[in-house]
Image 1 (cartoon, helix red, strand yellow):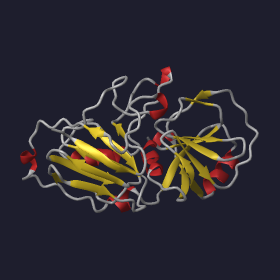
Image 2 (tube, rainbow, N blue to C red; image 1 turned 90 degrees about the vertical axis):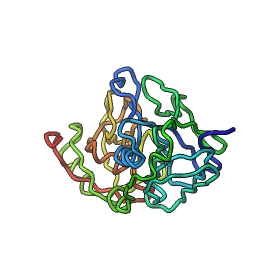
Image 3 (cartoon, one colour; image 1 turned 90 degrees about the horizontal axis):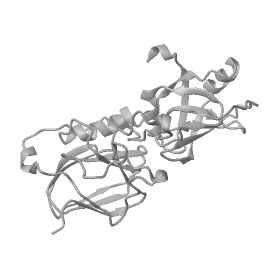
Length: 280
């Protein structure tokens, strides 16, 4: 008899994620992890998970799940469901594409059963860790707590998710120390747009070209670093991004605001304002 959950439809690849691999960047290993830590934590809390349980991360929606056993499950983020409830064996769940934000999370009580690499279950397709999940994948769960235990628990729906986590906000950026002050001011004064060229490694921004002739040796980059290409466009390093880059950095997005950028849809406007590292 089958157990767990089957993915019967998926418009894009999915992957398991947790809070990532910490302390390994010096070895060239990106920390990875969920694109939106706040939404991921909300999904876990809605099913009673208080630790770093593994979730299923998806982009946009367009997913159908079939249940082979009773499970308490939550969906938070893209698709606009933002709630948890008990799903029984034989039931089906469809997460629509509604264009509210980019990333979403599926959590089950006790978490999914996965293998770890360097202490994390986070998938990294480019590194060959975890791989992509899609139509036909069977998901195993750690379900030793019977769903009956959750029937009396009252968890709120998250109707405020769209306005609070997927809406336009001005992102805070600290100076990268490589560009002239007037070039930084020009960058901050313009409205940029999220390109269609986005993934877990990086987000390309389209907008006013910032001309420059800076050439640097390859050096370390971190999540949220805004690198300026030779043609004057911007690329933001995201969780699966490289640990070394060869383009000059005009600024660093505040760690709390990287997840805000992650949830912006392609074509959405992005604006920045200056902040100082002392604000961290």
